[in-house]
Image (cartoon, rainbow, N blue to C red; front, side):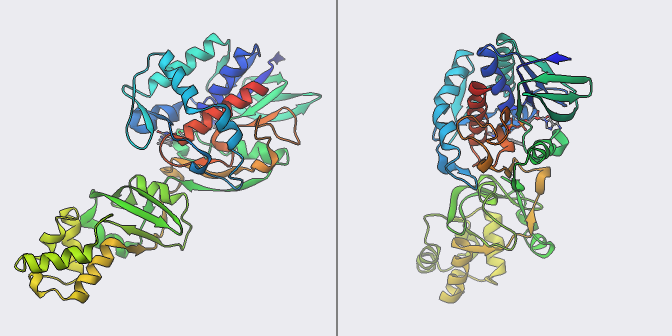
Length: 392
Ligand code: FDA
């Protein structure tokens, strides 16, 4: 039987980082993936430019049943560490917004960089290989693959979450966790577009494609970013962010004109330009199609002069505090990440090793640590992979 020190299941961001670090420490490392190519999510991330980290990364940017769990790994491997690696490879990048770093060229450069690092660290990579089972074997492990079993001292589960099954996401990591007695915090799609029921969709159909800056809130959580009307409901960064906090039956509130007191603005316009239509005045605050629809919904077909305070107040409330209940989300089909996962209670926050199962590690998205949109999820993948790589 083939023998390695470390077997890493999953050649994604976390798995490759862990393999590099373990290899650099002289460990004999095998990385296995059932996909045809490594790092497929890196390739499609950030619209093909990979938002590989966020310079403002802090524990507050992550959701987890234990918000403190991620502190140790994020401290030990920081955005500046990954930036230094990227710079060493001469990969040009830029900050797009809010601390988000993207490649100037292509996400493939990040994959190439990781593969080169793996190669230099002597890591063996096997693709298109199915995992048949993981079992204890004395002090070590026996991992069965479609092409035979492998013995090793440490198993690292880096199989990611459930999002985008079409790209190879499976529940394998959760199954292995449960097999060895670890709990799973309920999983759900996150960073995902939200959907409306049919009636609302019909009414909002003309808005498909309209984008605007908004402040979107669910309970006490709020995000000020762009929002997009789609033919299924709402998307755009602000909506993806809030989707991680929203639960079925819950309300979402949107201020579609942040910083503008729309009631006052409309009253002023009524005095200054009484002959203009409400939709025209609103069109100076909002995208025109949206302004038109809101004016129509309010039944305001005449001039500003004909608009009562009550009507203007109603319109202003729609703009400054539009409140609605999404019917659901687009689900794992389009979700960028999976909320929940392997319960951090069972893991050592410094090494990511299962406390009760020596030699078994869980890193990356499979763990119940989920970042906001904006490079945080890759930073968690790098940091947790790096930490496990020092320990295996
Ligand atoms: P990841 O999913 O990357 O890797 C898991 C690997 O395990 C895959 O290669 C998979 O094939 C393999 N695997 C799964 N099941 C297996 C099985 N049964 N047998 C063998 N192998 C198996 N984040 C961010 O910070 N910035 C960004 O720009 C983006 N953009 C983005 C866009 C889109 C469209 C998506 C879907 C996601 C993002 N993300 C992101 C999120 C980011 O991609 C994600 O959080 C990380 O890839 C997670 O890294 P992991 O290594 O944990 O899992």
